[in-house]
Length: 330
Image (cartoon, rainbow, N blue to C red; front, side):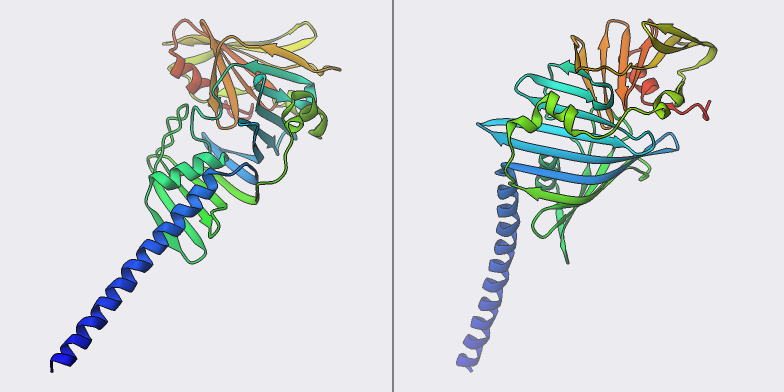
């Protein structure tokens, strides 16, 4: 009888030990993958990104490239606007942060902490950090992680879901608002790690040469854009003026909080033109903005929109500019 009891007790202990060992082995396995991801020396993520902006769906192809070279971090994100056939590239290199419009040979230079200043659905380090900081579920073909999320300059964002495969390559990223509506979705089509990369691929002139899109009249034809967020104002008048061979669309809004918007597409240059910006860079998912005194300027897909107001706060200016839509929506 005693032998039987001892045998049962031993069996129970063995089962418990195996279970505990499996648990720690599983945990260690994921932790090891996270550690490997954090030690990554380079990657390139390619995917299709859709953004819901005031009932308008915007579609992009995103290519996010990273390399750690000589103990320095280099980043390059190309956003290709499928509807306008235009690319905008944000790059971080030894000289600073640049926003490039290759089809126009144009660049804006900033002193900024991009992309470390805010999470991004196409920056691998952001995704791995999200996995590390939230509970994950081991699914049949990888890992699924859900949790609260905030994007510094997009107040809609409240939560995020990321799917990784078994080797911790991202599969998709979904971003939701407070109602659970998906406002950003990135479906990853390709992800390669630890490829050989050179500093040259992060230089402005080389990026301009390598990016194939050409300037088309569809960009200019899309103007003017109209804001959906009006802050209690109404469109009083609009006009078109030409300054230095550039066509400017001027929209004046009056009411509770008055403001004026000036929109233009920069002219195409034969050589790369770099404009240094002193204002604070405001990092957005599909573009960037910057603010100087009473003016805030938004740059996206070759379009430059500047908003002037003494009445609006910085957050209100950003809300107006980020709500800009095509001329079909007034």
